[in-house]
Image (cartoon, rainbow, N blue to C red; front, side, top):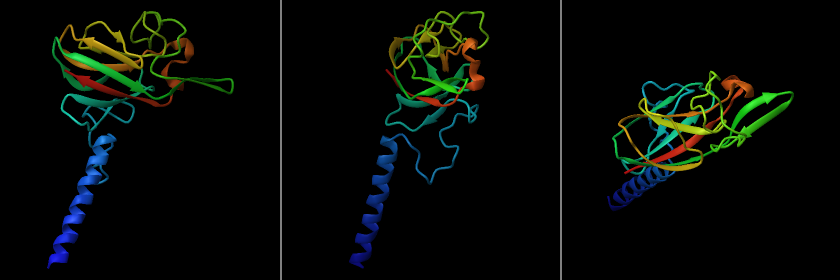
Length: 182
C-alpha cells in the first residue's frame, strides 16, 4: 500500500512540473483542446493568445498575413500602463527569387503613407508592429514600447505593411508579443 501512495505522489508531481513548464514557456499543455487560448473572433491568420503567468501579462501572436487590425481581446482602461516586448521574424516581401524578412521594428526605410490601402498607421514605420486602443490614434510598438493608455477600449495589433512591398499577400510568419498591463 505504501508503494502505491509513493507512485501516485510521484505521478502527481510530474504532472504539476509539466504544467509549470508549459505555463512558463507560454505553450498550452497537450491535454488542452487545439483552440484553447484563441480568441473567439480569431482564425489561423489572426491574433492568438497563450497562457501567461499572471492576469496582467498576456502573450499574443500577430500574423503578418492579415491586412487589418487584429483584436487581442484585451480590454484596456484609460491610465493603464502597457509594456510590450515583441520578437520574431516575418517575410514582408517575395519576388525575383528573393525573400525579405524583418522583425517587429520593421524595415527602417521610412513610413508608409495614408494612400496605401494596407497601411494601418500612416506616418509610422514600414512593416513595423503597431497598435491602437479602440478607435484612438495608432502608435508604433516595434520590438519594445511602454505606453500609458489615453483612452479605454480593446487593444489591437498589426503589421504596418506597405503596398509597394507587395501588401500582405506575399507575407508569411508571426510575431510573438508579450504585453504586461499595470
